[in-house]
Image 1: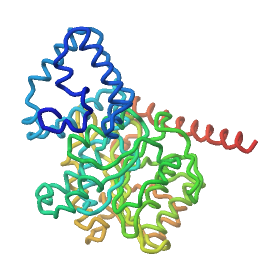
Image 2 (image 1 turned 30 degrees about the vertical axis):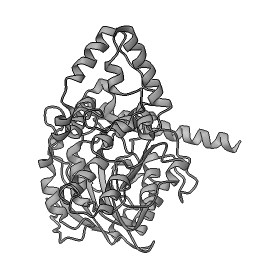
Image 3 (image 1 turned 180 degrees about the horizontal axis):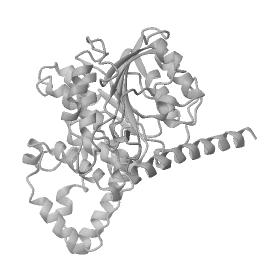
Image 4 (image 1 turned 180 degrees about the vertical axis):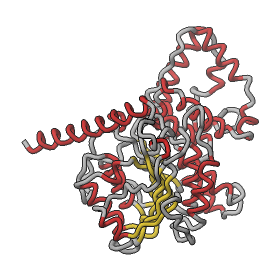
Length: 436
């Protein structure tokens, strides 16, 4: 693609497509393996080096590599790029994530959900957008697409503004190297040259991220693959819960007036101890104006119950939340999965209720106990012990008393709770060992 679109300057001489095509047989195979190593260790282009870091090939027979090279060489990459090569790559990521055996689902947020969050937060040209758990880049790509759609593919902007959008508008961190590789390739195919580094947001790496105008993210759900225990020394509230730690990073990482939308599991809404303090701190420092209760079954872990928190950082650090609006998209909703895929249409009613103001300032209507959209005052939340796990609709499927969820959903919920408990025990053990 680089050869055909005249962008080979980012690939070192001697490691380019023409060099690979010119060889055959075992020489081609050896050259390919050597090139992967060179690109991953000695490239002068940091993005190319990061994409090929620790890259390996599963190809063992020279004739298979040769057939693959010839097939790729016949492709019209220029036309493919013009027709949306980045969108094609996003589609491949989504297809890969839907296959349970691939394990990629842990890095993948459903694109209809991402598009909904971006549409409501409305990123603007000139703003710095951050994703501290960047995955394969879904949020950053969607923000870039949104801005390009509203600026005639950036042509409405000045030259300096265009340069900012391409080189500086996005930042973030991804912990898992394979996901980081996919992320960098995704950004490259979408013409984004901003820096998203490989690292751990819950360590000192996260402290290096600049404060942002917009933060959109879906932090890992806390499995062991999601990273080690938080080791930040700048948080007000020390916690072993990675989602609560990410939440602290997010609201502390916003500029005054900056806005965020973040996917978080239910335990963040009700966990006691430090969780209660962190939620109170969030509502002091930010206007937590909207919580969307998401349906189950939309992520790879079927039993995980999640929410989207929408908030704006205040100009002061006290009393910014006056009320919180809740939209219940979970109760009496279809069981989403392969049979009933989640689509953009499922979010239409919520988007209408949310309104056009990205900071929740649009005129809203409380639909009462029988509706999906309700408002609770800050005092109401305080009386509940800062518990934001609020629901009111009656679940029709449980009216008979014996219509239980599917066994795999129950099992997944149990596993999720056991996993959280195990991580907290590990954190406590590590803390005690540190004190000794």
